[in-house]
Amino acid sequence: MKKFYLSLLAMAASLAITPAALADSTYNVNLTFQSGATFTGTLTLAPGDTSIDAVSGTLTDYQFGSYGYVSSGSDSIDWVWYIGDNFASDSGDYGNFLMDGSGSYGGGSYFNFIAFAYNYSDAPILTLAPGESLGEGTGVEVNYDDPMVSGSITATTPEPGTLLLLGSGLLGLAGAARRRLGRKSC
Image 1 (cartoon, rainbow, N blue to C red):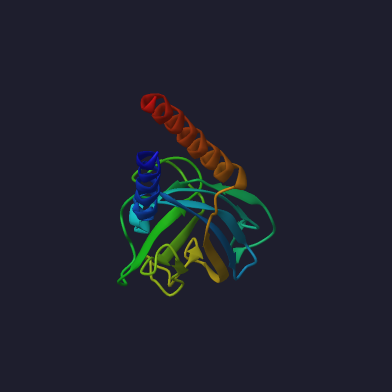
Image 2 (cartoon, one colour):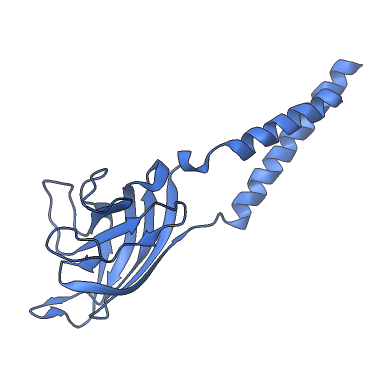
């Protein structure tokens, strides 16, 4: 019985010391731009939060006009310009372009993009880097024309159902191990 509890303790300790940065991280992003356009979506970041692996979200009130964004509309932002490349120039910052349309770096078609930069020095707590220059613009903006006026980037939390499933699975494993150890001692 003592071995059973020691093995459970060892399993719990190994789960506790496993670095969280080894898995991809998902963040909720909410941005509001000077024109009133907004972006709401999620980013999946590479281990260590040093690059964007994927984006999924909606840019609303985006319709392009000669003086920036006018009227209303919505646009799906669902790919990253060049996964792994960093277009930010400040230390600890990462910047890339979140794109609409279809394609990948060097090809495809797009109409709108968000120049997006964040600081990962205190990961998993990230901060937006609105002053970071990504090309022609001066910070987090749509199409280099529409600067961000407010925004947030927050880590997603696991759903309670996911945690319940994990907990019940661990209890099942512990019960099976206990029965198995009980049979061996007879």
